[in-house]
Image 1: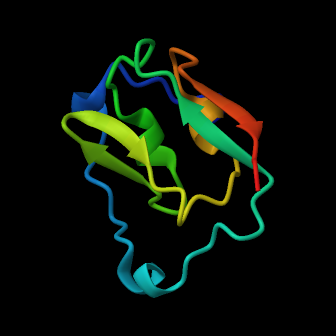
Image 2 (image 1 turned 120 degrees about the vertical axis):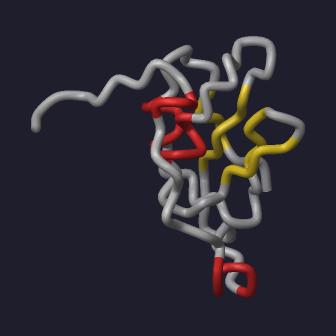
Length: 94
């Protein structure tokens, strides 16, 4: 398979096989220098960001994605996969 996978919405996504598991005790955010920020007004609630996050750092709260910055490493996969470009990578303020 080549090319980008296109999902029409959350209903097209398989159930995630990942959980935070032992990561609950291993916060991974300390070395992050950029972070994703979701523009809630632009978010279509497709949950593709949640599906593609390799660190399971995106939770679903009140039907919307919310980034758990304690576990986000700032990889930018969520921003790259967001079909509506509602996620922007911004400089981390320390």
